[in-house]
Length: 118
Image (tube, rainbow, N blue to C red; front, side):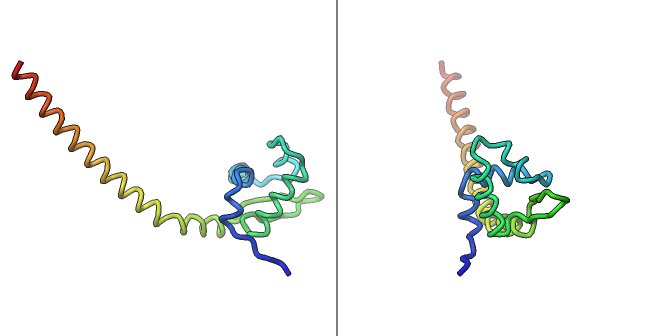
């Protein structure tokens, strides 16, 4: 029985996130990916296997080498899931910024009023 891996469990691991960032701009072989980490190559291979199983990465044979590249469809799934939360936090931070600006303006008026009385 093959269990389908969860994307969010896969990206919860910092090494796997680093692999995703590493190959975001270009396809790389397992050896090239492994050379960027202090762990053993079999450990990196396990991470690659997990990323393949949850379809975040795709493999492409090029001669004797297998190259790994991002699957933009799955990356978009993550982005689509996160988007409503990003918007919610942007709205909250914008409201906080507005409150802080009003607070600073109010304090300036109070301090200017105090300075004029001295």
